[in-house]
Image (cartoon, rainbow, N blue to C red; front, side, top):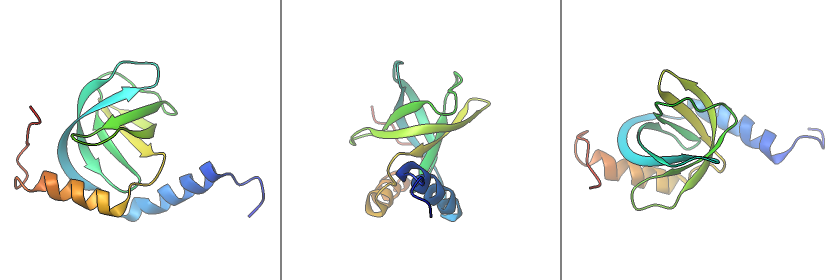
Length: 119
């Protein structure tokens, strides 16, 4: 490994390796705020330790920084990796803690797959 291998490169490599980890299909109401823009309501469609996909009617360009806020949680910084037909895929800047990941899934699965509103 050369000294020019940055921490972002290491994260990108780890995130790609983590793509073999389960990406759990789920439905969680959330808000997403792109850098320099207003936050909007969305629904997280899947979640993994390294990222998520969510609804985004307006195009978000790859490389855009954004912040995902799930109910009762602090915002998590991520980067847009892809956007396709109103769905955006993002990679977290820091891998999600496995305990937090499992707690989110347990909370939102408890309705047997029924969408639970935060209102």
